[in-house]
Structures are given as structure tokens and as C-alpha cells.
Image 1 (cartoon, rainbow, N blue to C red):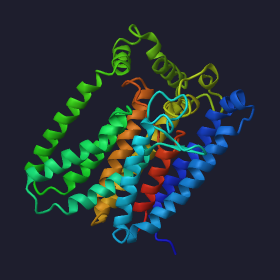
Image 2: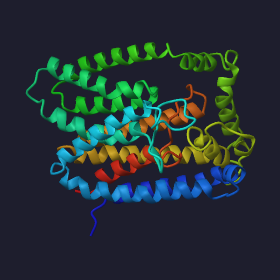
Image 3: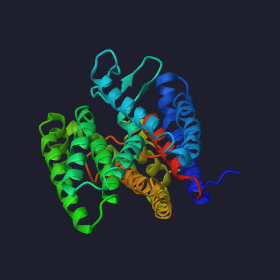
Image 4: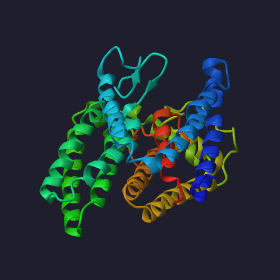
Length: 360
């Protein structure tokens, strides 16, 4: 008999079902218009995310109690995925038509290494920091900073600042869980904030980021075309009202919304379900994140730091997606867990959920 945390499983099932229904609604017209097949993207979502996600969930479930036995294999996969990030910069592996180097094209399929690496990076740093217990704080911070620099540098150059922040802050949570005192935590957090500030300042040298930020701050008065996605997202969400227009009745998906099936999927959901549906979704994510934290509090060894780091990852990514769709922050390009089309990122989440799902 499977010893799965039942409450976690129910939350995953509800969110997966909602994501599947919403994606069908969001993709129906788009698939029909572009491929003359209303089920084109829905079937891809069903197979590549939902069904494959269930498989990855159970792989994580069965791997969890044997994680130390496969420690070397996990580290090997981590470095394999890490070095695959560099393939995205090579013309022969770059995804056709992509302006960024986030995808690796292998012909029959493509993937995003910076998404796949998230749970592997958390596990790698748990193994790494577990062996540094007798090191001084200076030595620990040097190892953390240098190793983090090499991890996030190629992701930063893709460029993908949002993923850099998600990964960097997630492994920081792991690092903090291995520190001995509040003083050590405070010093480490101070260093982290300085590094994030430096990253943010350097990012302004990229012209497209500067234009996007200026467009957001001026509400489209400067670089008006950069504000179009935010403007349409806000319009779509606000038009949903209290109870929404009803499933399948989104007008924004017909008018046209940039990155509708990935970065802007929440807009379609909010338009069709309204404030009530949006609030329900936020509550479901709240309970999911809370449940992950509670599992971490009961867990030990690797599970505790993994759960805390994973809870932050889900929270931060969900916050960035909802906030950028609502016009509270500039567009970030991150997917909404369970809802957006983005197999690499969604499968990484399902695998991570499987890892923590075993009821001990």
C-alpha cells in the first residue's frame, strides 16, 4: 500500500485538474486558428505535462527513501543538466526563432535545462552543505557564493533573471537551514541581498530589460509596445468581474494576448472565473505551500531543507506569475505551476512533489 500524504495528493489532484480544464479552454481557439485542430495544444499538455507529470511524481515517490543510495547518480544528472545549459548558446542546438538561449533543441524534442535543474540543484546543495558542518562561516559563504556563481551564470546570460532569482534564493534557503545561529543567518542574508542588488543593477545594461522596466514604470508612455502584454492582461482580469464570464467565454484569447498559454495563462483563468475563482486558486496554492512546509517540519535529514526550499520556489514562482499578470510588476516570463504550458518546469514540480509525498 502506498504511504502518500493524502492532503498533499488531494491538493495536487485539484490543481492539476483545474490546470487541465483551464488550459483546454485557453488553447481551444488558438489551436483551431493555427493548426485547424482544436485539441492540438491540449493533447500536448495532457501527454507531456499531466500524464508524464504523474509518472515523474511516482518516480520521485519511490526514489525518496533511497535518495542517499542514489546520491552519486543524482549529482551526475545534476552536472549533466548543468552542462546542457551551455548547449542553448550553440546555433546547432538553439531553438528556431527563439531570441533567448533558454531552450535546447535536440530535434524530436526540446527542453529547458534551467527549469529541470531546480530540484536537482536543491538536492545537490543539500548534499554539499551537509558535508560543511565543521567549516567556518567564512568558508561556508565562500563555497556558497562561488558555487552559486557558476550555477547561475549561464542562466543569467540566457538571459533569464527570473529563473536566476528563483534558483539562487531556493539554494539560499538550503544554505540557511545548515547554519548554526541567527547571527550566521543574518550575515548570510546581508551578503545575499548585496549580490541580488548587484545582479539587478547589471541587468539594466541589457537594453530589452531597460526598455521593459521603463515601459512598466511609465505605463507605456515610453516603449509603448512593451506595455501591450501588461495592458491586455489587466484588461482581461478586470473584465472577469466577481464571478467571471464562464468557462470557454474568454474574449482575450480571441482578441490576442502575448504568451497566452505560458506567461499569461492566469489572465485567461481570471477572466473566465472572476475574483471568486482567482481567490480560490490563491487559497489552493496557499494550502499547498503550507502543506509542503508542514511536511518539512516533520521530516529530517534531506527532506526538511528540501521542503523549505521547494515551498519557497513554488511561492516565489506563483507570486511572480500572478503579480506580472495583474500589472503589479513587470512581465517575468515564468510559468504558473499546474496551469501554464512549459513541460520542463512543470515536470520538475511534479517530480519534487513526488519526492516529498511519502507519508513517514
